[in-house]
Length: 109
Length: 127
Image 1 (cartoon, rainbow over the protein chains, first blue to last red):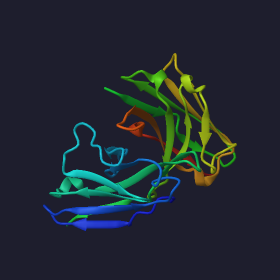
Image 2 (spheres, rainbow over the protein chains, first blue to last red):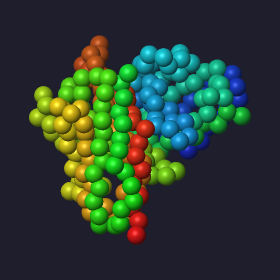
Image 3 (cartoon, each protein chain N blue to C red):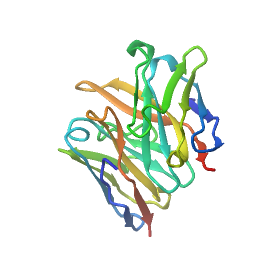
Image 4 (cartoon, chains in turn brown, green):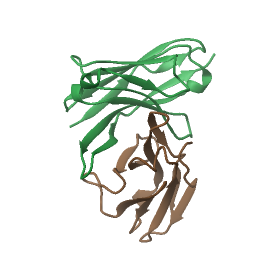
């Protein structure tokens, strides 16, 4: 994948976890980052857009940040229903298309 | 409620063709760019291509992996988007999602993001 994410992350209920996403100057370095949550067998859902904006209905436990060519998704007050795959995405000016991270499987222990 | 519903998936032999459809409802279809994204079983998301709105001349762009084989089109009067897939390869086997790109004002410039996904339709390329 063009964007690099750790393959897995974990935490216990109530904990705060972060998921990183690394790119380059043609994608994260010059464009906004979005984050998607995918539960097993379902389509991805938007959780964070434009680095740190939450769509209506997304709990404020979800937050995003970006610095240079890297971005992070943070989930605080971890809940069992947060267990899912998470993908970062950004527009790539060189490829002229959306690029995604390989996904991070979040396990709630 | 904004909704995208894909159809047309199925089993096709290598070298064959298939056309996917995406029916949109609940928003002004003609004003939005539409993208197709695919996901092979157990793998990550891969952007396939985009068709822009009429105001951007219905311009299309494609991922290198499908360029020259896949064609995206749309019919604004029917609120439909399409993905024509030719010369299919086994590596094209995936769930194909139809998605909408949203654009909204930002403090500086514009926010662009894919905000709505269909449930997906499965394409299997196998002999």
